Length: 93
Image 1 (cartoon, rainbow, N blue to C red):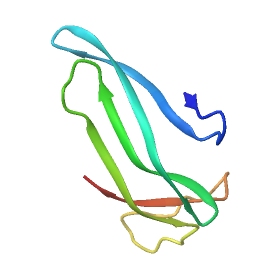
Image 2: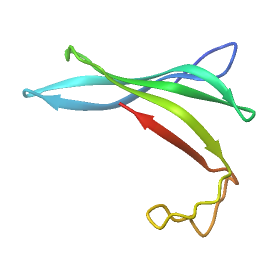
Image 3: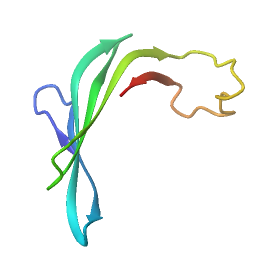
Image 4: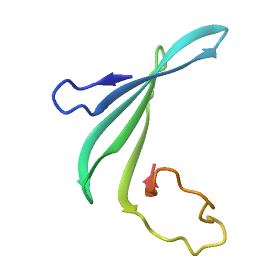
């Protein structure tokens, strides 16, 4: 994990290497475009880079909701919440 020395925000996470075409390639996930959402700094752009692969995968977070009670059956609220905080992101590709 790479952390900014001034803001202490995560900038990069070294991922598990991937084997493509018989060769192992390094993987890095970059966290960018931090915005403050309800008192927390949340990255709104996550970019996955695989060494030697020309196209990167980008995930953009459109909105963040904290501490929301879920009422939908497809996303039930866990029985225990050790952190006391739930984050829901609406993802766009």
